[in-house]
Amino acid sequence: MKILVAEDDPVSRHMLEKTIIYWGHEVKAAGDGAMAWMLLSINKPPDIAILDWDMPKIEGIDLCEKIRRDPEISNIYLIMLTAKDSKDDMIRGYKHGVDDYISKPVSADELRSGLDRAVEVVNMGIKIDKRRELRFQNMKRFMEHDD
Image 1 (tube, rainbow, N blue to C red):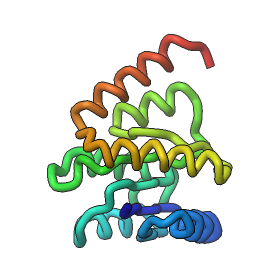
Image 2 (cartoon, one colour):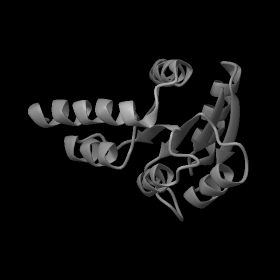
Image 3 (cartoon, helix red, strand yellow):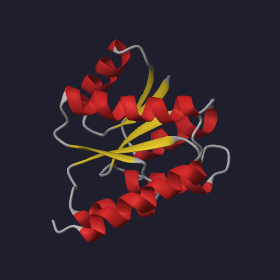
């Protein structure tokens, strides 16, 4: 599976990239949101994008919105990698098109679990409209529970 990793911290980016390659996936890596957008725009887009929320040039949350507005790449499965894990942040992310969250600091088990979910959705061919419904259900769940 083709996966884009956009993470501004070089050590974290390297570890993510090497781990995901080890698991058998093809990885393109970017150190900022503008480079990630370029990689999404110039080649066959990845199936999955793992985006850091806080990145230079284009933040991950803004990149999600740009991806969802572009019909050529709107179906990419988006995982937000972030230390922002409050209910409000998660709801904001879902509103901007995030499919899933992985909290920092990331463990290999969490990363593997998130990627397994993403790969399953991509392999099943679940399109963006159905995933939008799932995001709405997740938002409702977060709003119904206290932090």
